[in-house]
Image (cartoon, rainbow, N blue to C red):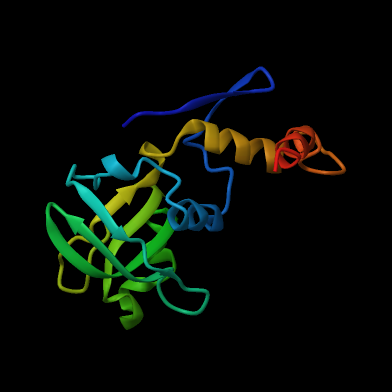
Length: 166
């Protein structure tokens, strides 16, 4: 597995450290902010994303009615997202029938395998291997950088210049 390092304020930090919430992973998935063309399961099975599904803000899996190919086999179902694969068990999804139709477990960090009730392993995508470090640096700078009155005050001038072009 590769590890991405970023330079933030002259300090190198390891982006495999989780410094964000699960909702950030929802954002990455929803807007496909990862190398979509090259994603693979933890067992190196090719994944082709047809549809990421509809973001579910209620009980149940995070994205509903997704469609994807795993090794050229079309799957339709739901996607569940966690910071760590072990969160599947922490949240007791293995005992909840709402999660029986999950076709892909998207995690930042794969720490243990996850199994369905019938003993088959749930296909898992470790997202940290496919996210551009610049996205993580932007997130880190925005939410964990120096305390500022306006979080985007360093880049607001760029936005103002770009908006004046239209």
